[in-house]
Every structure is written in structure tokens, then in C-alpha cells.
Amino acid sequence: MMIRPRRNRKSAVIRAMVEETKVTTDDLIFPLFLLEDPKAKIEVNSMPGICRLGIDHILKEIEECLKVGIAAFDIFPVVNESHKDKMATKSHDPNFFYITALKEVKKRFPEACVMTDVAMDPYSSDGHDGIVDENGKILNDETLDVLGKMALTQAEAGIDIIGPSDMMDGRVGYIREILDGNGFTETSIMSYSAKYASAFYGPFRDALDSAPKSGDKKTYQMNPANQREALIEADLDVGEGADFLMVKPALAYLDVIKLLKDNYELPIAAYNVSGEYAMIAAAAEKGWLDKTSAMNESLLSIKRAGADIILTYFAKEFAKNKR
Ligand code: PBG
Image (cartoon, rainbow, N blue to C red; front, side):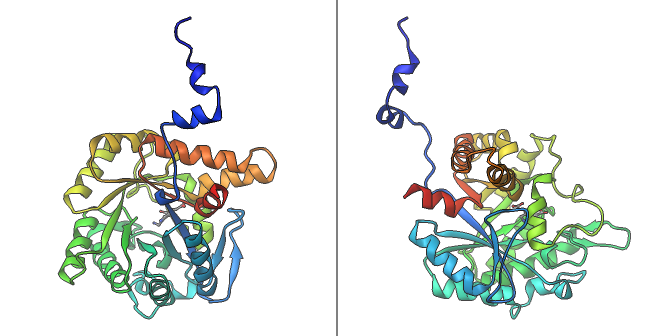
């Protein structure tokens, strides 16, 4: 045998030397769930190890994360039912606890990169990302107006990256124009470009209590069967001024991550979603999987597929393990 691939695996040093992919804390964005009560801390049942936090705890959490090298956060609000309505009015109320908390975060940690989500679901009494009419139809163009107001309110709070996750047609361009028209030319947009109608968002909807009250999200989120359709979405987002293209979920869609990486020059992000976290965390609790190795392998695979950036609930744990 002239060729023996095992020679390049014979020691830890050589294995590290020939390693093609490395995940670093620089690649990660940590999603956080914000509660209205500043002092509250409640674990998400379906996400062992992940808590919903009031602003007092969020500030502590961010401080701890910065120390271990996690510097980017995606903050989602947990909205009480009493604040929800059909038009998601609270989503663009500058006095709502979410917006005041975001301002506090940016004031305390100007160096942290803070991202927010633009979609109606956390604030909508229908639990949908867009406006629902009397027949249960999701109204695309009417929703754009709400999304624009939401994005502007978040930009005014000093947010670094706006993340439209609603999958309405035309939203990226609509939001870009509103931001630019109001002087927020430096506010970035990370578009949820290829966002699939996935079962893996279940634990997130538990965390936010944001599941649709009726129907599903299949008229706006993509069909998991489709790959080429992701190119249509990505083309539009590039043309409409997105700064990053995101694929979501990540692990079941590694082919889509690779497809976008091969076809676009913009940085590619992947969202390692709540259900992907829950599967590993739950199996680990039962002693069926080693959590750290399964986490490392998942993140590595997402990066190997072509993701430059990974949004993951494992961010802090990964960073602490690296030390
Ligand atoms: C809101 C939104 C969702 C997620 C991120 N933004 C849920 C959904 O679209 O139903 C899911 C994130 C996760 O599961 O971790 N539109």
C-alpha cells in the first residue's frame, strides 16, 4: 500500500494540523429569551439548560458571555397574552419593555453585537408572523407596514443587526428603505432567506408561547422538500440589500447551507434551532448521548457545510468548554 490515509490521523498534533474546519466563538450568535419581569428566571421545559430571563439576568448573562468570547446576541421577547393583539401593536411601541431592555443592553455593553427578530408572532394574538384576515389568510403587503415600523423601532433602540424572520415577500427591501429613509444606513439586515416550515421550532414556540392559534405557517415558510426555491429567496434578498443570508433550521438543511455558500458572496448564517438543541439536550439528560461531543460535532458540521455564522443555544456552553 503506497497510500495510507491513517498516517494523517496518527496523533493529536497531526490531526489538529490537518483539520479543515474550526469553529470559534467569533462565529457564534447566542439567542436569548427576555421576560417582562426584570427579576424573573424561568427554565424552558423543552430546552433543558436554557432559561427565559428578565433584564437583570440578561445583563449578567451577557457580561458572562463576553468574558468567554461570545459577543453577539439575538434577543427575543416573551410577551404576555394581555399585550398581544391582531396587529402586533406592541412590536413597535418604543415604551414596551422589550425596546427599553434593548436600549439598556446597548448602553451597558456598547461593544456587544445585538440582533433582533422582525416578525409579528411573539406579539400577535393569532400567533402568526403576518396579519391574519377573517378567512385565516396571511396578508403580505399589509404586514410589510407593521414589519417596517418594528424594524425602525428596533433600529432606534441602537440594534446592530435586524433579522426579518417573517418570510413575507418584499420585506427586506421594504425594511431597508425605511431604515435608510430614517438615517439608519448602518443598521445591518440578516435575512432569514431560506426559512423552512419546520417541526424543529417547537421548543422556541414553548419558550415564547407564540405557537399559531390556528393553521400552520406553510403559506409563508418554505416547503422542506425544496432546495432550488432557496435560490429564488436568496436572489431577492441580495437584490433587496441584505447583508447576510440565513438558512434555518441548520442540521436538516446542510445541503441548503452549501448551496447558498456556493452561489453567493454574502456571508452565510445558519440557525441551529430550538428543536435541534432540545434533541441533544434531552438525549444527554437520559445519558444516551454525550452532550459536549454531540454539540461540537453539530456545530462543526454546520460550519463545514459552509456557514460563516451560527446562531445556537449552545453558544455559551461551547465557549465555556473551549477554555
Ligand atoms: C419567529 C421565529 C421563530 C424562530 C425564530 N424566529 C419561530 C417560527 O417561525 O415559528 C425559531 C427559532 C428556534 O426554533 O430556535 N418568526
